Length: 340
Figure (cartoon, rainbow, N blue to C red):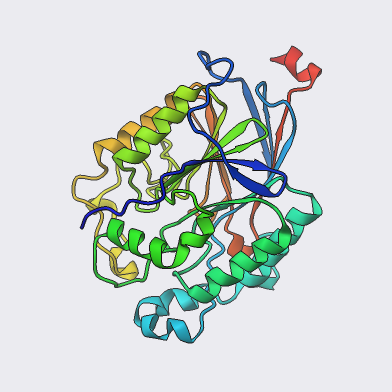
């Protein structure tokens, strides 16, 4: 199947609560030749992120893995493909209080928190849905609109996956992005887009098939050349030595021999030869980028932080169980500058 040509515009400036398209060819005053100095601290879901290139604070509420399962009569023809995931997260246990909760309640509470703290940005980093339900997608859009807070969305592997539906994963992703998820991208390219917030460029890159394609690698390379401070948003974490196979983007152990869930998820088995060279090249490019200040992801339903070649990667708990990240990007105070 010929790859769909998604919307070409890939850079958006977020100002106030509005979105306006800007050029992605603008040249910064100074290119990054040496890696930016970064200090990142994490206390449960609270993340403080200091770097020399931040001039004013940015508050981000980061959400991954809500796994909303609501559906209506429009979903009846697809129940043979949605049945398992429609039952997977009906009731959950809150990661802090240990009380019973559910994905809808957790999502509403997280958005209420974002409003309370006057977040500059909400990042939705995949598996917000357990399958591409029209009802759930419409509900999320209405909830986000009610906050008045700008948001960035990138898909996870469940957002577009109807389990057991025939076809290559790339084609299925393209199909259900086009049919269901497209409004969440707000006119931007679903597979790769850049958003500028107070001098920081957030890059949303879809790695929900565990792979990166040539266009995405070229896009990321161009952003590195800009010299602007970058934050990478991906659903599946970038591989870090010692981590499990779920850290599957650029994982040298990823492939058919380690795929334990293909029958359960009713999808094609991972390739015998593992990742494409493009995916490995992307991993290398990410952690060699001097202007990358951090990576934020989800997928594994567990908080973690890894340092890969000096670059922090921070992973969120699942929002289905109430998890999220409360992230502050902050300028160094004078006392911090003296320490570093």
